[in-house]
Image 1 (cartoon, helix red, strand yellow):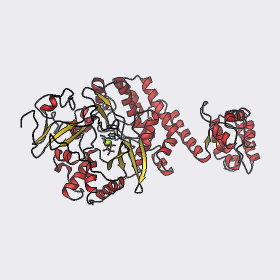
Image 2: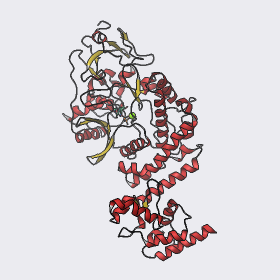
Image 3: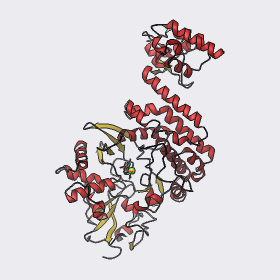
Image 4: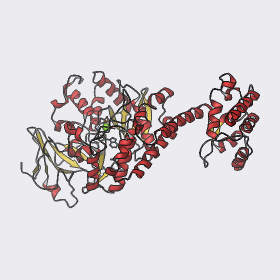
Length: 556
Ligand SMILES: Nc1ncnc2c1ncn2[C@@H]1O[C@H](COP(=O)(O)OP(=O)(O)OP(=O)(O)O)[C@@H](O)[C@H]1O
Ligand SMILES: [Mg+2]
C-alpha cells in the first residue's frame, strides 16, 4: 500500500468516511491500519485533493500525505477512538462475537478496528468506518425500543436474543459510555435512549432526568430530554446534538479526553484547568466558553455529579476551531458519606474536593473574578433550591425518590463548607423544602387561580385579589411580581375565610407572608400541638387566640 492512496483493506484495516460540514453524504477520508500495538491513519489522495477537505482533528491528524502514527503513549488517534464503542458497546460486541454473555470476557480481546467495523453507522459525530474505500454500506439495522430494551436486559442476565434483534442491538453500540443505551430516530429527531439497568442502586434514569432539568433551569446549555415508560421501566431520552438539522447532516466532535491528548489509561490526569487552557487557545468564544465551563463545574458540585470525567465533556470540530457541545451525562452519583471529589481537578494545584469554595478560589482559571464567580454560584444555589420541586415534577420523581436525592446527592451540606454564605444558603434550602411541602399540600395559588376559584370575571382577577390583600383578608408569599396565595385561606366558595383576616389583625403585620405560612402549617403549643391550618374550620376562634399569644410573645 502506498502512503497516501487507500486501497483494499487487509484484515484489521478500516476506511474512515466523513460527513464534511454541511454535507448530507459521506466521503472517504483515509485508511486506518492496525500494525502491532498501534493503529496508524493515512489520508487518501482523493480526499487531500478535495478543495473542501478538513483535518479530522488538526492536533492529531493534520491534513497531509503520509502515514500518521498516534501521539506518543496512545495506541490509536483519540479522535477516532471517540467515534467507537466504549465499555457498554464493547461488551455487547464481544458477547455477540463469542456467542456468550461477557461476565468473564475481556473487552481487550478484540482489536480496536473490529469494534469500529461492527458497530452501527449512526455513530456519535460525523465519522463512520467501512471495509471499502469506494462503496459506502451503512450498518443501520434497527428494532423497536422495547425489543432493544429486552436485548439489553437479556445481556445483563447473561443471555443473548436471537436475530434480527441481536443485529439491531449490536448497531446501537456505536454510542459510547458505560451504561446500557440504544439509539432511536423518530419523526426526524435523533435520541439516545438511556435505559434502566437491573443493578441500579437508585433511580438512575430519573435522577439524570431531574439533573438535566435543573441544568436547563440554571441556564446551562443542555439538549432536550424526556422520561418515558417502556416495558414498565423508565427510559431517559436525550436528543442528539451531533445531528443538527433534518436532512442527514452530521457534526464532527471530539471528547475533552482527546482535546487533552490523553487516553482512558491516562484519564485521571485530565483536569479542568488544562481544559480551560485548551479553550483559550483552540475554542470559539473563549470567554463565554470559560464561563459556561465554570458554570458546569459548579453545577456538577451542586448536584453531586462526581462522574464528570473527560469523556463527559466534548466539543464540535469544524476543521479549524472547537466549540463546546451542550452538556450531557449530568447524573448525581451515589456517595457514602458527605465527602466527595470531582473526577477532574478544579484548581491549578489539583484541588478536586466537591466544594463551592474550591470553585470560588479557582475563578481566575476561568477568567472570572470572585464577584462574578460568586454570582454564578449563588444564582445556581437559588434556582436549584427554589425550582427543585418543579424540576422533580418534570422528571416524575416520587416522594421517596425526592427524599433520596435532596440533601444527599443534590446540595449535600459538604459542598457549602467554607463557602461564605453557608448559613444563609442552608436557610434558603430549608425554606425551599418547606415551600415545596406547602405547595404540595395546599397549593400556592396565583392571582388568576384565586380569581378562578371565586368564579370572578377574569379581567377583574387582579383587582379582586389585590383588594383582598390590601384589605388584610388574605396574605401572600413569593416575589412581589408573582404573589402566591397559600390555598388554605379560601373556603369552598373560593372566598377568603373570615378567620384569616382575624389572625392577620391579631398579628398586626409582625410576620412576613412566608413566616405566616409557616406559622399556619407548623405544630402549635396553644392548639395542643395541632397545626392552625387543621383547626381553621372546626375552631377558628382558638386559632385567633393562638395568634394573639404569638403577638404577645413577639411584643414581649
Ligand atoms: N445528546 C447527545 N448528543 C450527542 N452525543 C451524545 C449526547 N449525549 C451523550 N453523547 C455521547 O454519547 C456518549 C455516551 O453518553 P453518556 O455519557 O450519557 O453515557 P453513560 O453511559 O452515562 O456514560 P458514562 O460511562 O460516563 O457513565 C458520550 O460520551 C457522548 O460521546
Ligand atoms: Mg458518559
